[in-house]
Structure formats: C-alpha cells, structure tokens
Image (cartoon, rainbow, N blue to C red; front, side, top):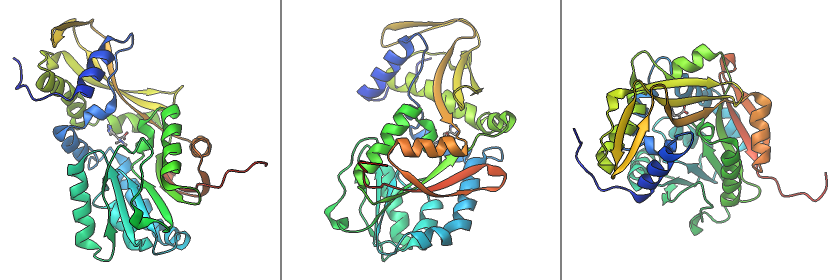
Length: 319
Ligand code: AVI
C-alpha cells in the first residue's frame, strides 16, 4: 500500500532516482536523517553495542583540562553540525569561549542547539548559521579577531569517503582560517565482531534506521517499495577500512518510483552508508591531506576512539 505523499525535496528525488540506476545502486547517507531517522540515530547512540558516542564523551570529559590548556579563553568555538546536548556543553565549559557558532543545514536542529547553550552558558554569544558546512561558510563579523576552534565530534568524518573527507577538511580550513585549531573525533579500526555489533545491533534499531530510508522514499516520492522484501546488512570492507550499510533484497523485487520501474534480484543491495575507521597514522595523514597539522591526540581505553587537536598552519614554501 502506498504511504501518504509528502512534498518531495528535488535533491532527494534526484539522488534516489540516479542512485538506484547506477551499476552499484547507492543512495547518499544524508537522506537517512529525516525526522524519524534522526530519532532512530539518537536511539542508536544509546545502544550497548554502539560504543562511539559514550566512548568519545568519556574521553572528552577526561581530557578537557588538557584541551583547555591548549585553547585560550575568549575565542570562538565553531561547531560543524548542530551540537550535542552532552559533548558541546563539556567543551564550552572547559574552554570559556566568547562566542559559539554552530553551523547546520537544518535550522530546526540549530534552534535546539542554540537553546541548550543559552540555557547553560549565559556569557557566551551564540551565532547559529544555517549553511552547508561541506562548503566554505562565511563566519559572522562579530567573531572577527577571535581565535577559532573548530569542533567536529562524533566520527562523522568517517561517513565521508576519503576524497570527500579531504575536501571537507579543506573547507573547514577555509572557513576557520590560518592559525585556527580543530578538535575532531575519529573512530578507530577494531575487531570486526565489535564493529559489526555496533552497526547491526541485536535490538534491531540500526536495521530500522536503515529501512526507514525505504519508507521515506515511499512516503515522499510516492513509491511502492515492499519494505519487507529488504533486510538491513552491515559489512566490514577491510580493503577500504569501513563498515558499510546495505539494504539487501531478500527476494526478486519490482517497484516503481514516479513511474520509473526498478528491479532488484535476490541478493542485490542498495548501499546506504559508509563509516570509515582509521588507524593512528591513517587518521593523521587524512588530517594533513586536508590542511590540518595534528598537534596532539588523545586515545580512549582499548584504542577504541581518538580525539585529535590539529592546527591550520600557514602554508610554507619550503620544508
Ligand atoms: C553519524 N555517524 C557518525 C554514525 C556512524 O557511526 O557512522 C552513523 C551511524 N550509522 C549507523 N549507525 C550509526
């Protein structure tokens, strides 16, 4: 049965129709995060097997004095993303910035993040910016002259293939400027069983998160995909050091999206997300390639997760 038709975002429509027509069918991961998808991702971060969020939060908490010692008070914290209710306040309390600038494509999420900060940190000026942080973003004049610390937690960098991750880091550099710093969370390579458990939890929340994309296509593009013909699959791709999420066709399946017919044979998949994991050296090399010189790295117990503080050094003409 067709689900209620909502007004479709033309970019979503194009990504779905083009992505499903590719030789390796794939849809960009950003479309996983509609309202329901964001709720489900929130639930994922609290699952026992999803270690990144709690590991990074505990690490941040324990190294905050060391971060504060390297970041002078009175600067500007620029967060790439709307901010988290737990991690952002930890950082702001420790580094005492004059200004906090969260950047997100969604104004709704930004309203929430500005409210969290306002409630808790009256002395900080909040300048939310609705923008796509994968591009250069002009910063508000009010923070001109302030030292800048970029904040990109959550190992979201892992959701970008290395070429795009490098571009992203270069945009961060252009946005923040030479001399600024970046505090970034990076998830580490670890035994495959733990990685798969984090992305294919026994409770089935990640499965619901992944399958929600098909419900979204049905709802917003008036499609008739039989969602029960697909199953969530998490795979470790060792060559590319990443966990991949796929939607696996459990039987031969035919459906239509806006009058276009699609066929998936049993065992075919739609690739929906990558989550790259880094070793110490590959992580630092990625930062260097993106224009950021690592200054110091803090690592969680079992080397599960790393926080790196890096600096946008001035370009040098010689070694
Ligand atoms: C948002 N991002 C860092 C998550 C990750 O771990 O790659 C997205 C996620 N997908 C499934 N579980 C979590």
